[in-house]
Amino acid sequence: MKKLHLSAATALSLMATSAFAADDTIKVGVLHSLSGTMAISETTLKDTIEMLVEEQNAAGGVMGKQLEAVVVDPASDWPLFAEKARELLTVHEVDVIFGNWTSVSRKSVLPVIEELNGLLFYPVQYEGEESSKNVFYTGAAPNQQAIPATDYYLEELEVEKFALLGTDYVYPRTTNKILEQYLKDKGIPAEDIFVNYTPFGHSDWSKIVADVVALGADGKKVGVISTINGDANIGFYKELAALGVSADDIPVVAFSVGEEELSGLDTTNLVGHLAAWNYFQSAESDANEEFIAAWKARMGEERVTNDPMEAHYIGFNMWVNAVEAAETTDVDAVRTAMYGQEFPNLTGGTAVMLPNHHLAKPVLIGEITEDGQFDIISQTAEVPGDAWTDFLPESAVLKSDWKDLGCGMYNTETETCVQIQSNY
Image (cartoon, rainbow, N blue to C red; front, side, top):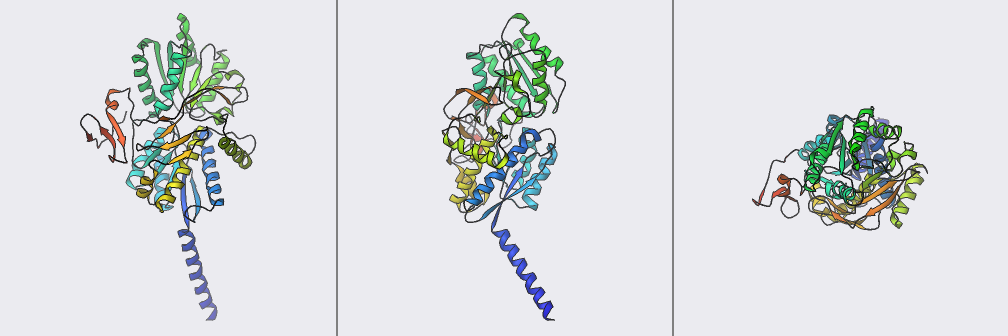
């Protein structure tokens, strides 16, 4: 009888300890593909959040509580992203989610996040034309990447014909819709703009690259703007090299190729091709040196850093500061505390969270070097991110302001809040 009493007491003690431990932990959801075509890009972002969580715990946690990273694998399967987001919020009861790469995965997650009033930090450049009160977009909007890169082609490289090559999903299609209009506004004829889309994981690039080369048959300068995502980039760049196409012949500026993607390629034939981001590992600042050193100490000397990692670094630290300021992880309170948050970026400036849930970020253009890094050849001051582009008439009248207007689609002409979002 005595043993039974001890067992019951022990059980009650364990239950109380478990409940206390759960209450004493803040759960951070990690929603990145660890398998499938996007694993080449997303696994590193999972590793980044785990590192940031460990560093924060070593510094005392948040509000005196330890953070716990809850990792799931949506496996590059877009509907599965929605299921895993729901699992994180309802089963694991996470307080915030850091995740997604492709826009199609974000679009899949969006209704779940909004239904359950979750909070998502999205770290990758995207097409804009979206504004959710439940998402903070810490990657680049088109005016912080696509438009400046196009201006560089027009003004510095004097490109006259454009090949817009993308993976067939919402980000490339919407970005290219914006760029087509922008190029036409700049005087580029429609017949000098070649647009092509390929599926995820596409591998046979011979005809497409041959078509791009043929664009320059009349002697006009051709440039490629690439929104190709994932491991399809490997075949694309190999085909360029196989045809002997150099950056001097036909420069390529990529919006989804960074240090991580290049680490799996022979970059000998890629030297001089370009990428546009808001961060490169080669950026010179004390904060970047510390970040790179911490990353390599944890992951190994061969591992590189990249732009979406910096976006997670900024977003994570802003979220920590907002939670501390709000003294709670409640989503509505944290959202309010996020507005105006400032945090040093890794390129030597300061990131600021705007009322439209976008950051002010610098725009960098880099040339690929033989060691798989980027030589930064152009850098702007911080550019405020636009949720709605100025280069499509239906979007130019829209404004996002969740702080004062409480609206993601405010029509500045009618002075009304549009309730149903457009989906380009």
